[in-house]
Image 1 (cartoon, rainbow, N blue to C red):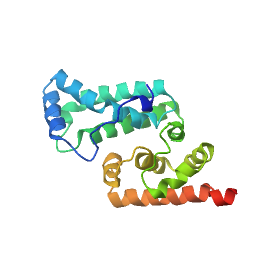
Image 2 (image 1 turned 90 degrees about the horizontal axis):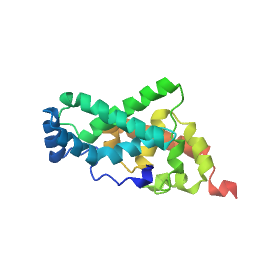
Image 3 (image 1 turned 30 degrees about the vertical axis):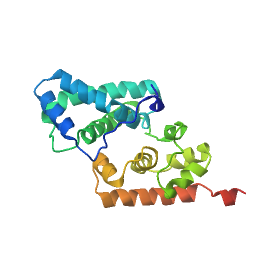
Image 4 (image 1 turned 120 degrees about the horizontal axis):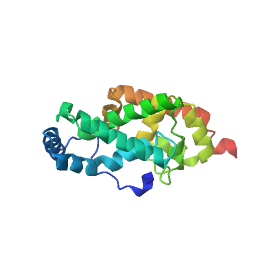
Length: 198
């Protein structure tokens, strides 16, 4: 499928919609069509998130299927006051962690930079990601903690706000800002500037 072959999701994780809440309530009562509608609305966003956590399309597709199977089993416990997509992201995050434990491999965001749109950064601070060669950035990202990698990719590749990332990773906004700041500082130290390369 590939992350560039799926449509951008219109719903952001920080904003639960009335339609999502209504569909989720119906799905909790066993309405398969309502759950199908939630799947259609959010499968692209979940796929993109999972794609950046694993190394290939087939694994990402398998994990997305697992995420929605877990969501279907857990839908009776879903609380409509929280954003449905944020709830799905938490399930996806747990599925990726479980997969990593099974595979006993380090979760990496290296593939994020192989994505054709990886240079579409959303803030000037992220310019160092776009101005460096892909191999240098991959190497630098691999040296960050998994949480720092996750925050950097969600912020500068996926374009989520700090508030939305806080909801997705289950941390306070200030904590996410601190993680982002430390990650960018580490990347600045690890990635030589253009002037230094000249």
